[in-house]
Image 1: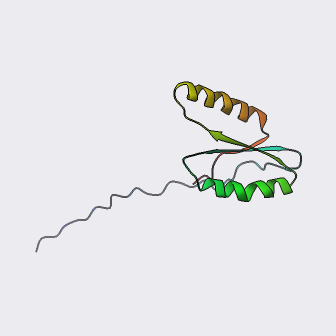
Image 2: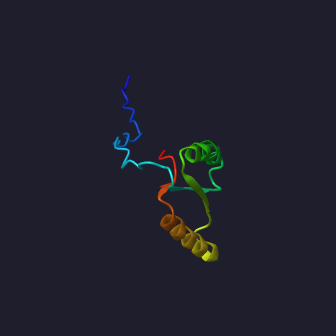
Image 3: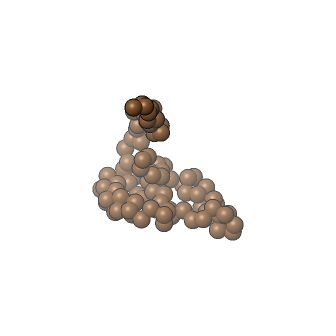
Length: 97
């Protein structure tokens, strides 16, 4: 009986950087921006959980829903993104997953 070799097509896992980044420091009096979009509806559940906690810590929260990235709406989206990034002290833009 002939032998066969089965190849595993899966890629190795990426290297993980355990560094969470710089500490945001105290939240009291700071503006925390949360960027979301309509493609990931379950992220709205995360927002519903985070906003009360951030506000309880003394932060103000600004939500920003990203729009399309092409045409006239794309230009508007990039302008809004620039304003959002400039205005907030801390930005939460995803879960990193």
